[in-house]
Length: 261
Image (cartoon, rainbow, N blue to C red; front, side, top):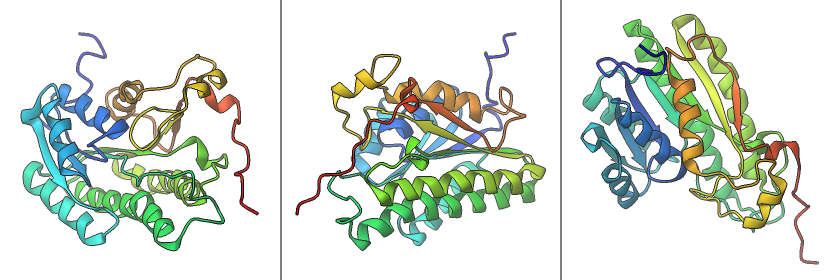
C-alpha cells in the first residue's frame, strides 16, 4: 500500500478548522472531509459555512459552527460544540482572521480593529489550542495542530495590526510545539504567500514578483496542510513553518504607505 494512500485514520482522527467558510480554511476543511476525517467547519458567517459544506466531497462528515472568535465566550462555545459532536479533536487548524484593509496603516488603524485582529488570530488560537491539548493529554492521545501565519510575520506589510498578530502566532507555534511535544502533540505553521482567496484581493500585476509566475489559490495550500497535519506523513515534524508562496518571499515588493500631509 502506498505511503500516501491513507494519511489519516477516519476511525480515530477528527478535526476543527477555523475560518472554514472561505479561502484557505475552506480548502483545508474540504480536503480533510475528502480524506474521511469528521471536521468542524467554524466561521463567522453562516452562509459561507453552509456553502463550504455543501461543496465538500463528503458533506455528511462536516459539522457547522458559526460565531465570532474575537469573543472568549464564542471560543468556549466552539469547543463545546466540537467535543459534543466529535469527542476528542485530534487535528486543529487555525485559519480564521478578520479582513484586512489597506487604509489601516500605522497612523490610521483604530484600537478596535487592532484588538480584533489580535483577538481572533492570537488569543483565540492560543485558547483553542491549549484547551484541545489539555483534553488530548488527559486522554493520552496524539494530536497535530496547524496555524496559518503569514510572510508578514517577518516582513512589514503596512498593516501593523496584521503583521504583529501573525508574528506573535509564529512564536506561539514554537512555544506550543516545545510544551506539547512530550505529549505527542505536534504544532506547526503554514506560511501562505499571495493567495487570491479569503480577505486578500490580489492585484494580478503582483504575479511578476513571483518566480513561479502566478498568484496562489487556496487549493495550493491544502495538500501541504494535510501533509503536515498527518501524523503518518509528518510524525517527526514540530515547531516548523512551511512557506507556500511560489517563491514570493524571495522579494519584497511593498513600498511605505502614502500618507496625507
